[in-house]
Length: 195
Ligand SMILES: [Zn+2]
Image (cartoon, rainbow, N blue to C red; front, side):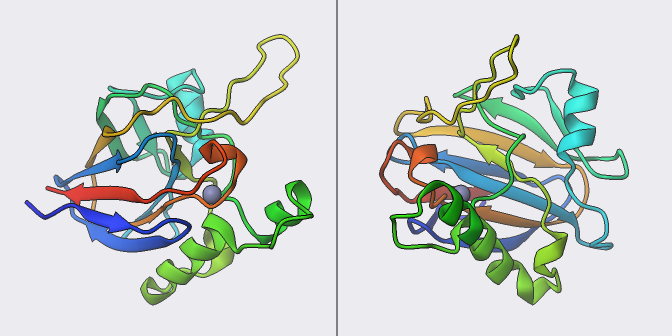
């Protein structure tokens, strides 16, 4: 069991997660998103896949009991606890370009994409290999008729968490998201624990 680690606001990290270990992602203050990536530690061409996962789950709202699949249709992570029940797996990590698109008047920020790219560099993962992230606590409701989506503040409250168990040896990327709309307009840290 490890201590809880803090990811400071608007930053990110990367670490190994061995098969059978659990990863708990905690929103310590509430309304804060954490982008999660997973790569097969033995073969970095195998990565977490939104398309595979949503196809097999037959829903865009993933929670306890759902598996997160790789591009090779193998289970990478399984959600074993979830105190929130609302996460996003549609949208890519926020980036310099995202800020230019949505927030042209704000100072630009490299966002989750830049933070993930920097953290994953030491594992040999280049930026172009970064796929759609599983966005813990991100609240993206979709109108079932029109397909229009919205990015609303997370419904997570202080201390809420989601826990995953690893089904293979993984390299994990994890952030405290940097985009204003995703996080209710303020930037907070994220906590995580590996057990
Ligand atoms: Zn972000």
